[in-house]
Image 1 (cartoon, helix red, strand yellow):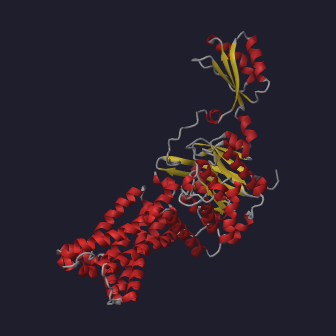
Image 2: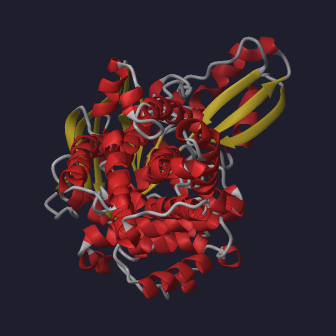
Image 3: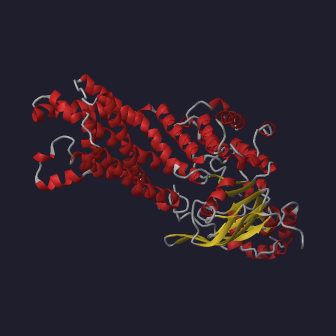
Length: 328
Length: 276
C-alpha cells in the first residue's frame, strides 16, 4: 500500500514504566492516527492509566519513547501540553468553587480574557445540563454532575488531543449518553480522542480503533468489528437435561464453533462461542436433538470483556492488585 | 445537544494563539482561585482570625505582668513578636491546600496544561497574602486598642508589615515542599508543628535572650525568626538599621533558593502514582 498515512496523534514504542516491582507498562507499542476516537480497552490494573499519564506528560517512562502530536513527551513536554487536555479518573474540579468559577478558571489559565471565559463557561454548563447548578459550589453536586463538569472543563478551549480516562465510570445512563455525544461532537471539530474504558460497549459505540491492553502491553488491535469477530462475538449457553449427555453434546456442537467446546463437569451447562447467534440457536437445538441430547434451556449472550480476555489471553481478566496505578 | 454545541465560539485553531504572557497571568489566575476559595469557605480563614486575637490577648495578659511588670510595658516588646508568630503559624496552610489539590487530582490537570508550572504555587501563595494581611491587621488593631503605640509611626509599621510579608512568602515554600512530599494532610500538620515549635518559641519573641542558658542562647541567636523579630521591633520603634532588614531579606532569598526548586521538583514528580 502506498496511500499516505494520516499523521500520528500518538506514536509510542517500547514504553516501560515500573512502580517498585510492578511493571505497570511493559513494552507498549501504540500508533494512534489523527482524528476520530481511539480506545484503550482493558481491565483494572492493565496499565491504561499509566499509559495515558505518560502521554499527558505526567509520568516519565523508564524506557521507550512516545511522540504526542509530533512532540517527544519527555523532551518537549510544554509543546505536548499546548495541544492536549486530560480528564483524569477523579473529578479534578474544585469542590469549593461554583461550576461557573471552575470553568472560568480553566478558560483563564488557557488564555481567554475574562468575558469570553464567562460566556464559554455558560455555554458549556448549558450543554452539559448544569445551567441550573452553575452558581452552586461543586461540593453540592452529585457524582454524575461533577463528572460532567470535569469533562466540560476539558472542552473550555477544545484541544487537538483529548485524553479521557474512564470518562463514564460511575455515570448514570443519561449522563453517559451526554458524555458520548460531546465526544462525538468534538471529533467533528477535529479533536482526536484517546479514551480508556473497561466497557466493551463503550469502545464499540465510540471508537474507530481499539487497542486491548493487558499486563502493560497491547495484546490486540483493530476496529471494533475486527476485534469482535476475532473474539468469538456471541455465546450460546445450553443447559442439558442430563449431565451424562455432555460428551455427546460436545461432539454434536463441534461444527458450530472454531474453539473446542468444553462441557462443565459440575453442571449441565455448556458455553458455545459463536461469531453470530442469529438463527444458530434453532440449528443447535436440532443438532442436539439429532444426537439424542435433551436440552432444558438455551440462551444467547454477547461477548463480555471477560470473554474477550479469556479468548485473547487464556486467563480471566486480572484483578486490580497493583494499586500504584489506580489509587483509591 | 449537538446543535447547541455547534454554537460554541472556539475551535482547536484558537489554542495556539492564546499562549502569551503566561507567567504573570497564570499566577494571578491562580491567586484569584485562592481568594475565591476563602470567599466560598470563610472558615478557611478562621485560623487567620482566631490565632491573632487569641495570641495577642493571651500573651499580653498572661506574661505581661510577670515579665515586664505591666501588660502595657510588655506590649511594646511583645507585639512585634506576636505579629511574627501569628503570621508564621498560618503559613502552613499553603502546604495543606497543595496537598489537598494533589489528593483530588487537580494538580494532575494543572500539570498537563500549558501553563507556567510555578504559577500553581506562586498564585496560591499570593492568594494567601490576603490571609496574612488580615491576621496582621487584627494583631495591630488589637495592640492599638490595648495601648500599643509604635514609635516608628505609620511608616515604620508599614515597612515592618512589608518585611514580614516577604518573609512569610519565603517561609511558605518550606510548607509547599512538605505538602507535596508528604502523603497526607495530617503528616504535613504534624511535621510542620515540630519545625515551627522550636523556631518560633526558641526565639526572642517572648523573652530577651540574655536570660537564657548558653546553649539555648546560641540557638536563639542564629534563629532566623529572632532576626526577623528584631527587625520588626526596630522598624516599629523607628530605630531599624539596614543590616537588620537586610539580614531578613537575605534569609528570605535563601529560603526560596532552597525550597523553591525542591517544591518544583516535587511538583513535577507529584503524580498520584508516586504516592504508593
